Length: 277
Image (cartoon, rainbow, N blue to C red; front, side, top):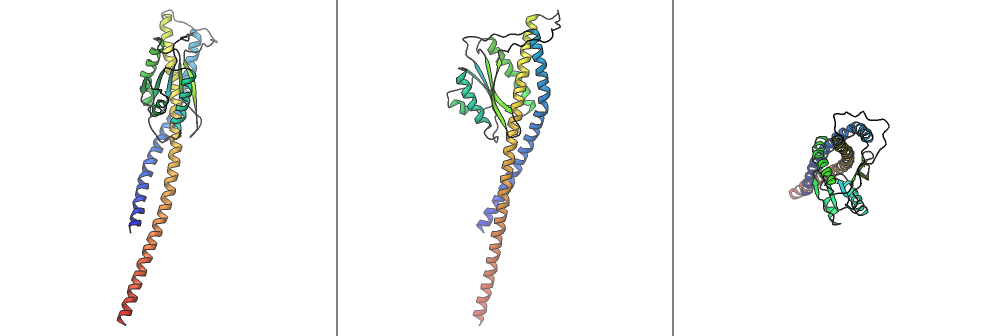
């Protein structure tokens, strides 16, 4: 009886877990689709900004002698496989390579791995779980990074993030974002005489940094939810397989109990017959 109750309780637990994982799978699929659908527009806007930067002729100098900064884009949520550990390993490698002194961390999951190598974020931001959260994050993040660069707190900025490679696949990559790489213009810029050159440059640099980070974060968001979607699928398959096995065991236990009960009845009836005789 206790074994039967234990199996019934386990089936109830598995059913509750299936509901939770199913909900997470649906939510990840929703955010994944939205992130992927938004990427083409972001890349087109980024390409337009590249053209504007080239036409203006912006060339930001590398602050010689000023330590580099590193932005690590990880996650706050789990159930996404080795997503955070792979990004943390690359972050540690890039930190040593560029002699980084200032680290910015988006997401808290990478902090423990970085701390093992005595790397502690100067600023930490909550990782976005949706497009709405991404926009809110960028307002403060881009401003902080640009101010620290302009005030010579960091001499350059490298970003470690995930490059989406399909559902359940990504590559940890490192990209230098600041200073902006000079690009040759293909067409002359029709400059308005009413706009001051320094003002135009400042606005262009700010917008370039914003859309560059937006594209990077969007790609990372798609990669994260793609990993979580695959993990949820694997978890759902395991839960379904375990529930099927448990159900079969429960049927077997019930059958054994029924057989034993029948044998007890037969044995009891035979005993009464012998006693009567």
